Length: 133
Image (cartoon, rainbow, N blue to C red; front, side, top):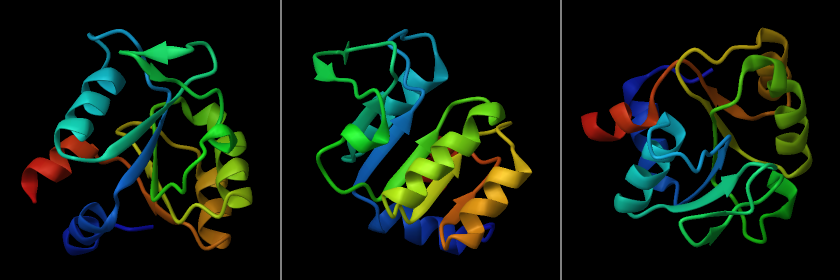
């Protein structure tokens, strides 16, 4: 698990494309607000939510596998019970970094990701970390 501020700062500098799993089309939801913030900061953001087809004119993907481009980082806004399937998909797609937003935990899924060589960031807000760097 990644916990050093310097490692996180480096990841945020190197990442260009972010898949945001659990992206909401509701402007009052944190996932929507952070997705917009990431775009404003210059990241290419791919919304992932199987219940929504489009967010602000951009296609919303039902799974990570549908995204046609390479993903540098997967930012997760889904409850911990959904992490095992998200981690499985990340392993299949050879995703290098999974970022779990504040309060999202599933120790078994997190360990499986780490065992597969995926860097995992937990219990940190990507927006807060970007504002800090």
